[in-house]
Length: 112
Length: 111
Image (tube, rainbow over the protein chains, first blue to last red):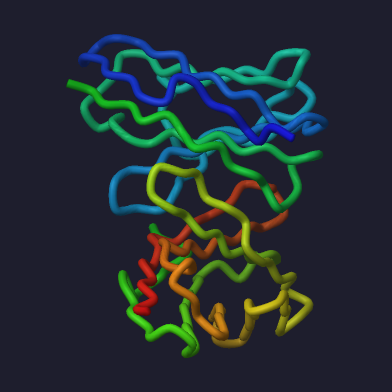
């Protein structure tokens, strides 16, 4: 069975641009969460969606937004990119949002 | 404000010996704890978890211990194998389903 898949794997953007990251959960999982992992730190929670509704939001600015589609895939959007947005963005899925969550391999975003 | 802390950035252990990874937390509302293992260029992989109503959970070579009064948990790996070499993250949640992670401990198992 396919695990959580994320695209693209790597991305390079410049300051001020916007970016869209995509995630497909494990088949049957209805909840998707997004995390940001800066080099040398642990993943930090950004959003959780369940059944297309936002269920939780971490301490990130409004430049970050997300949505979940009827097929339970999800997009993370970041506007007005800053150098500090350079990180590994991880997507995780679970049946109902409970634990454990299963992670994809992430999208490495570099801002120049 | 780091609510989950892993104070040892790295640990080296001889193959066959016990590896003990430690984690401390500050939020008394945490009620579920997990350990994830991460290899380079891969996402974190769930390893083992423990509910706050328990003090021990065992799965094969992996055992997690929880000391609620000390707000401390540990992961024991016995015996350690070279394939266990990875970064280990401790994580916790309050029931709101979002995880708080520590900064990770890099375990190296020496053959």
